[in-house]
Image (cartoon, rainbow, N blue to C red; front, side):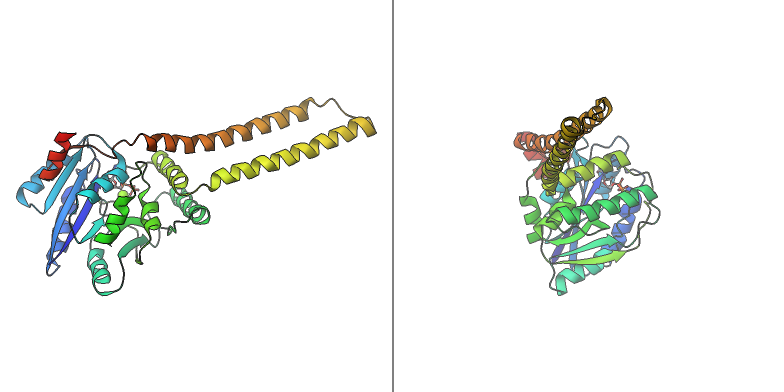
Length: 319
Ligand code: UDP
Ligand code: MG
């Protein structure tokens, strides 16, 4: 009998979890000859999420939970869940039902009977999302496709069903600054894309405000492309050429035409422009160095505080 693991990162999802549980129980009952484990990864929520997970586990032991010692972010908690999973097939989905669990049926069929290693969901539209967020997200994916090797599909969700082989490949990328969408794309494997209509979250509010979405995008670019570093060098060379041309122009005015005007304004412009570019370039380089710094520390990607999965508690006690 096949086993499917469902990984759900949660942060302050007390309002969504009861709906999610209902929906999952319904979907799981539709499968024949398949058993399930649901691993809810609590990112140290400040509401009753963990209590609810414990209550659900007490009555239905297909539902397990891992509670982390703080909010390590969605990506690290997905890693924690993937690492703890034991299924032949593994899926990751959000707690707010924006990833339609009913797609699992199709995804399983694709992996079982067609020649694919992964069935992944993407949103056909972003209805209901603030327009600025949609526009920026669209630009981000276009930019990512140009500058990185990892082929990221616009509207792609983390929601996908993967074979154990693909999950092991994802786990083998051990970077601590994780950008999971990029990692999924980078490991490759035969992926079938399944479209769906965007949905609004069932309850509660987004846990990924614009500010976090922005730093998430920067992390993605830096993790999967060195093109910005190349761009900074090109910009540097271009500025040198402009500066050289301008110097020649000033020299000609001074030496031949003898009509040089006192050059204070133009000098200031160039200096400010030059400084601006320099700081921009330093900033970009700094971001890469920061990533290297964080990676070489080899900090754990997450720390388990408590879990219904016994082995995880034992490992944690040894830490
Ligand atoms: N999430 C998390 N930690 C965070 C932010 C989000 O575990 O710091 C979880 C959240 O509980 C949800 C999923 O990640 O299950 C997606 O978050 P959300 O729905 O808020 O993001 P959005 O859909 O608005 O991009
Ligand atoms: Mg959501």
